[in-house]
Image 1 (spheres, rainbow, N blue to C red):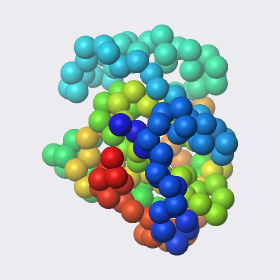
Image 2 (image 1 turned 30 degrees about the vertical axis):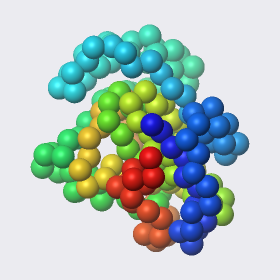
Image 3 (image 1 turned 90 degrees about the vertical axis):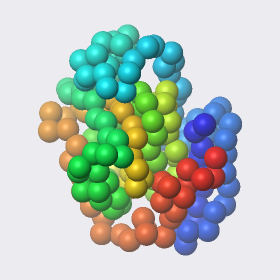
Length: 184
């Protein structure tokens, strides 16, 4: 189950929301698009990028057409991935992008931390969740110490993921993915 936990910048929990419609509404108020897509297709976690994109061709084509994306890929990690710690650390510091960040979780889960104002909106995204974070929104992503997820990534710039780190240490004050996962 997806959740939205809202924290003060100090790390104090303000509110936890579990209702999908309310999560989508609250995120919309900060410019974030959050949808739930149908994931009832038979698709093993071992599916290739091509198999994943073909399984979700209708949704992918609709989003590409709507936003004019230039590149798409599929990223996945499991607890036995040899680079899991390196990859996790790459996304843990607060950053922005000149492009908006768009993900669809085909399987597993990961947590987006959005910092558009004096609060941090922590979104535990799970299988079926589509999230679009506006360009220049301060945020970070945590896949946890035992990552398990597969997501389609959409980019409007050919370079793909390019981060501009803020230098803030706020990500150290807010609970990690593993701790947020326990709120469910």
